[in-house]
Image (spheres, rainbow, N blue to C red):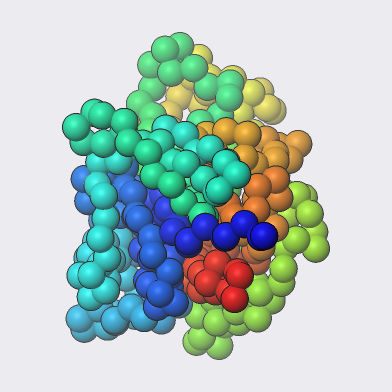
Length: 360
């Protein structure tokens, strides 16, 4: 006599864009779920970003599955508008969320999974699940250079996620460390608000790569729609080492005009001085680290394999070690678009379809 397959019940960890999209996609397929959010509101992590910052990708490519367009349908959403849209998304689909729920551990059992979390009451609770979708994202875990020791430095510093227009307007000698999309966002904002006597340095470990935001009047994101569908599993873990280019040429033009100096990597940070690899010594009044983020997966413990860079290994968003455990919003989790809103929307549909189709 065969053993009965346990009923499907999915625990989703994180109520940002990926978690909300997963909830909607599962609900459309009649798969029950429980959605846990560490913060007191949906999209708590996104609320840390400068609300006036505008998304690089157009609104039409930034919506979750079955998400209504925002009022006025702006061409590009600010983070304030994105958070408001996600709040309406929750209301539109009546998504139930357990807030103030911090997941401590996820364990794999013979029947599926057990998710241990601490609630608002500080008591520990356990949920049983047939599947787990980790949608914790990256914003809550900004990374700093490993050789940077704040207690040894006297200059003002912050990670790019904390940078606001007022901070940049006050900077006369700005140093930005890192050359990806967030560095471009910081420097473009600085160019808008800087004083006439201000100067900026951009410290890079590798060559600066930038792509135009517009080609023949069309946003470049529409041109990359097809190639970014390439399955990253064909490249293996090395896909995670690919560098993200800057979108837009404003920084390169400012370098050419002498407003920004392109500089080598940092050798050391000490006191009020930053020493570069070529020996140049800078004394910035503000250092902004555009050095990326880390995907939150420590609560998954031994349920994921790790690559040589200590990042989780997944194939088509699923853990290579533990079937039934999915990571959404993870860089190159399924395609090159996986860490972006447009990719998250497609991956949520894909994962929900996989889960709904099991055992049918």
